[in-house]
Image (cartoon, rainbow, N blue to C red):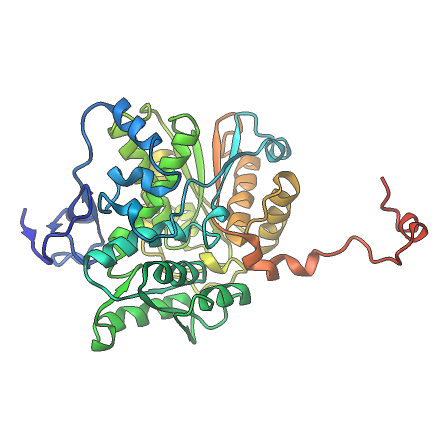
Length: 425
């Protein structure tokens, strides 16, 4: 197999090159994302640490309480923790006993709450890795196509790293996400169309002189960017006492997060950091944008694009790049891909808030809603240890719950009025 040289040698830790997920062709590290032989997607290949798993475990545990504790397993330089960064990660794994009782789960239910990241979504993880690749390849501007959370994460990370930023979003995003993306001082551009239209535009810009010196985190830096999602798998297993969860429910937008969580779990097994035993991965979509769920239920290997129509805008990618790989993983692990309606999403957001005090954005409502649906259908085993992902903060998607959420009563400032309202317990 030929190894194609596309960039000068860069120091990105254990990253040894790029490998095509379809044909296996190898490439040197560089700002490329598609195989020159078959046009398949590229991902980072590693020379991972060998030797005593206990020594590696101790090294990780002695590291900083953020994703850089896993630097030996990521495509980042050895001194990454010393560079200006938002230092995301090591968010809470909440043992959700109240929610478990509501859903009838006896085997242990956990919520991995990534709303605690610097810009309040898991996107801070992937962007932090992409920033290191951008630095290595000499880019001066950080960019992306985004459904909202990524735009804010790129703007914040670029500001912290001293880079320029210019991010592109669909014109009709939630107001909170628009403000959060714009506040960091970079350029924010609304595109008339869906996320898929935005993504196509960015792909064109990469090939134009206007995009010279730009690192698009989810396009030409995508192989590195995607590796940030592995840290979710690493943290979950470490926080469970270095053991695999039996079941994990992951939201699907492009599908990259789910595929990289699976990759992270397999790496931990290969390194001897966790016991090798079966686990199941379940994908969660909104009914109004559920091409992967439809393909899974129909027994298809091809994911047909759809036009999104859902309140879960962070998951509204009608042509998910990693959709076929999600299908493979769900089937290989014995999991499934399911979807829920917008009404079920809202109900699930409120359920999680009421039981565990976690206010999830709509993507979190999707995972909790799908978990409930899978348990009721007998697909997800309530006697097993289950982890549900909440990938963002509900303050970003207030419009989803605002119409049905508000004061229990509005009264005059008197005890008599309070009694009359019938609220005194």
